[in-house]
Image (cartoon, helix red, strand yellow):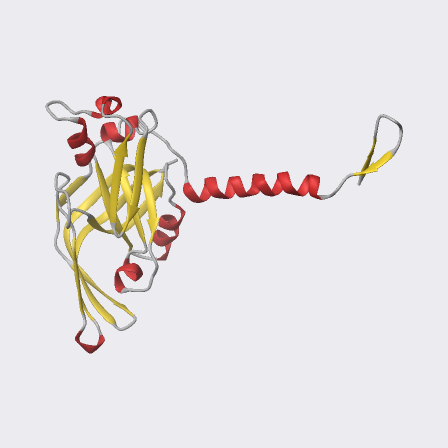
Length: 224
């Protein structure tokens, strides 16, 4: 390609002049899509859980699993962060994606407050640059840190079927989602006498080891 310069001479223009900016734009769009975006959603209430009984059995590779329903669980939430895990063990095959979910004032002020959310090793973490900026999330009679803790949760997501799995695979940070299903306890037996267990938290106020929800999802929607 070429253009005419001010002296009337033709000057060749490298094709890379056009390709490089386009490539950089595509990379930026890919990273934005892959990582999601910071968002805020007001008016989201607490998750609803009601006692439930029942179970299903599932076989994955050499594992025979009993998935026992503990509570029916209905949650509308803002996705604060997501983390994919390799499907190299039974936990990864069951729940290859964790969602850090927020509601209440955490979801409402997530964009205004400079939260730093992250996930690793099946845990989620958060921090904030200054304590004073967290004040808007404080609930009556509670400090801001406690308010964040009880209005957010790390969730191990198990898809009930392929259509639910397809929706979960599309969920990104910043999405407003509605998920229904069951908080479950899982017992598994593998070849060679191997065993596996995974128990869900049934409280929003706990923390530390065992505080994550193990969520068998039967319905999943991305609201926006």
